[in-house]
Length: 446
Image (cartoon, rainbow, N blue to C red; front, side, top):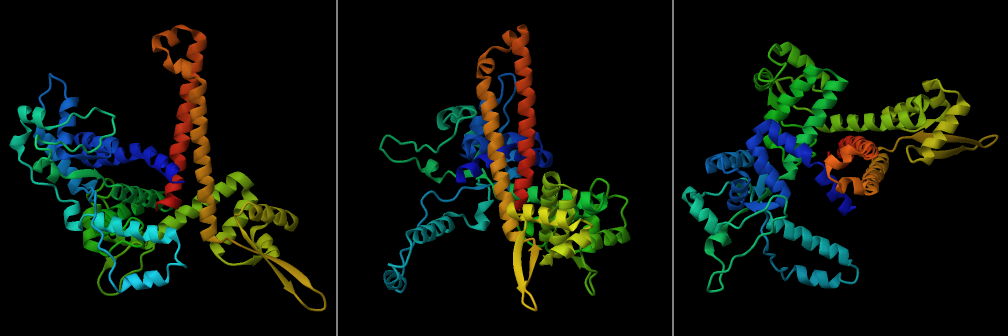
């Protein structure tokens, strides 16, 4: 699963690049893409890489790289790497006897996990340093010094930190102090989560609600301590208005329209100070419900969709006759559909026996949201894996054509048809995989 998570993560690179390009521009995109490709780089290595991509006719300007890099740091798209060798304090005298007494009952996995968590916490840079750009001497970036000091980095290669030895066998002091930077995936997932919330508000309510929600998320983003935060920080109506009118489509909104949209987004009218907070978790929950309902509709039909939606909104157990009557489905059909949904782990069933003059058996049904979300996530992982395998199979089947020169493929009608078919199939599968990843993030990351 960890390996597949890594594959999915790499699949999201185009989305991450698009976020940076839309917000910061093309120059920042190039620096950001370098960090995505190499994993971690020092600023010196970033400059050296950018110099190699510039043609001889163009003049390389290190100030542009500096400006782009600072924008990425200020936007929290990149961060300092954790310490390579964090210091772990030995256990105190009070903790050691307790561990010895419980050694027989302690699992090895629990101990290793505890050590791993301690190591991660110790390696993480302080929040005040995490997004602090290092002070650099720009005279060091002359052509002569760059050639002598920087190790070349070829585009597309995985960069590893090399420790250069001096004649005396010791590491150069400047190289020791050099700060390594990496992509801050937490911030990128947060941006994607915000985009998903805005898209859901626009499709479920209207465009104005999406604009206002986007304005509030823009104002409160810096205060979010984690990705899947429940609610935004409170924002005053005046601050919301000032941010809304800056956005496309928000210039014509007045305070009354903004207040009405905030009520549609689930905000309660404040009694004293007019501040508003948006429940992001409820928006994500609604988006998840819509995704599962669409799966049920496509797979089991409209009658199953109506019954599932009724149980999902109710959130409690209902008897078969009640479900059939409420959703206008024949009882004999309702039982078949409910059994099928239960068999495929979309519903939870409970049998109840009532003792009286004679025993009566009832079947009660409900949607167990927690187990359902996990089941849907597992199905999506399997679907994504099947798509990846199918793409790999198609490419393997036509590997001879892919290895041939394009001009030769175009000359032969049969080869040209096979190449065009492969291109069309690849586009369909890749787009399906990207759409599936949007749904995957709803259940896994958000």
